[in-house]
Image (tube, rainbow, N blue to C red; front, side, top):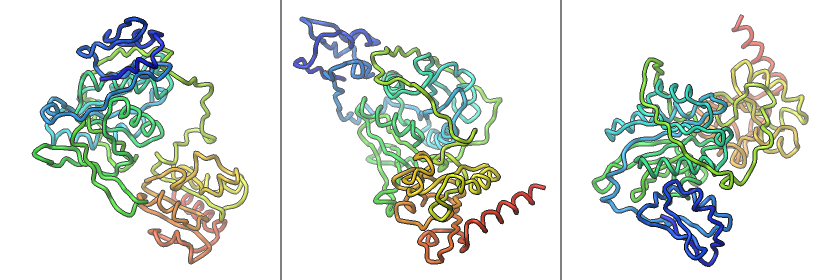
Length: 400
């Protein structure tokens, strides 16, 4: 449901134009809502140029919660290529759906993405809700939020999972705010628990700088929503013979609803390199590596041999040696790779917080008392310029 501030409304009629169910009309120059027809999709909220429309957030009655069914996963894609977080979340979603005895569904948004939608069946999706159109070619918060709000209002899923990527961390809270839902961010664990006689999603995430793990539930709102860190869930073995049902949803998004325009897309400096927060292997350098861009060539060579990605510490970004997108740590990217190789980084608490969920940490530093060794699984005391070339040589020899 929404609320219209009649003192602010200018009578521009943009909300009436975008309402997909004709729940708004004009009376005496003011927008009026037909409450019984409103589906709470929030299209009018984005369209209003003077912020005269706000969503009304109400706790749902326990008796209403039983109508919500299905475990949904937002499957992120770029240029028709499925991002890893979708299959990862479908793997966990399969477990949750089986425990709840509900369907596992995926949602994919973009343009010309039918092949991407079909690929999701291989990873366990029983249904795929597909929203296509030129307006969804490039990601925008308003367009994607409008699409998901429409789908959620129409189909009423029980659980909705997003990857804690750049896009997911932007989109999920926007949808939650639009529909008045609970949201737990950066989860590292998900399970079904019984609370007051009802099965609910228990969402586990680090808190207080990672010193404790918090278990969170959203008992009075549906869907129960969470963003999940990449690589903490595992996909099921894909079966490309598996099929399912694709449900195409036409969601009309007016240009007036989008507040920004994509002028240029900057590709990574190194072709094919994935973001540090999504990589399985990350090789990070700090001041101990050098004081210019060329000094990171050794780390890039090592990362290439390992099919990994290069990261850096905060001082390297501040000195304009590497871009902000490469920064690993609490004030940069929180990561959880399978292997983290950290070179010439002393290990300030802010950096350690950002990497604590890494499966295996290898630290290289010429200071035996560097704090980074406290959390390393394997530590090498030595000069980066000597140790890294030795590692590169060993890897090359093993490939021959």
